[in-house]
Length: 364
Image 1 (cartoon, one colour):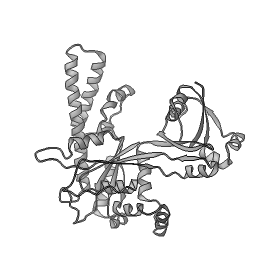
Image 2: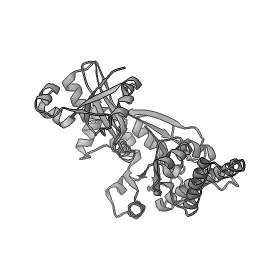
Image 3: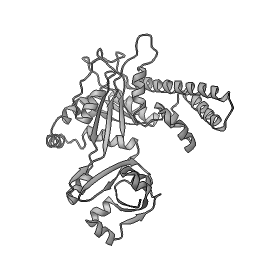
């Protein structure tokens, strides 16, 4: 699971990356912007895994992972109509979801690329960039299809051309492709393009400490009003302060948050919101050897979920023995849960739910 942190230069992407990953990537100034990206993999905090580890005392505990990619907001070159370089857009395109970092804070020491702080204008500019980038891909595909169809109008080419024409009209109206309802066939036809306007987007408002406490701040009000109007997920974070907190030891961080009455660190909130926009859940496997969280899309059938562990388990799937985490905790053991009748045998089409503890039965 990969989240690409994207945004205009000087919006605070690297600060948020450092906060999330506890890395120490060099912060860029406006002059020294480069196209070098930073990558970091972090474990997803989960109190359920902590509890299961306490109960089973396994040799190994494995949490779900999230990879964050810090994509530099390289500004356009002179004479170029694009806000981002083609390489920057390509780096965003390969990510599974976009964490769009938008600047709300004012700081004279940190120049804004447009010499003013206006989160709504910044989001609109970036979204328009995504639309135009996808439109170029669609137009190029239409041109290739037109050449191929000169040799004969095969049914599959006609279906693809119809889909691309629908995409073209949507993008020309400056709408995201995610607004379209696609059939499973259409989804399959366009999956390889990795369109920016089809990706889940989480908007991260990078603000100052004072703005975090003052929802009547003009930039804060405009930010949330825009998100509500567009139906977008987003939240505020004081990245600079949160980065300093993330540099503390886990014990000191917990003490700091408790003293200041902060219910959840920005780091944990970012990870939780990333799971939410990607529609991800976790199921668990347990035992003396290993307690492990397996992230996957909500609604994934049991046989497909088995393939997360090993392709042989998916291929030879027979049944899934399932108990909900809450039922397991309530009864204290798998054996007691079976006695209480809360352990179920599910077939290959069973949609795995968040917190399911599963043992797969298979034969190969």
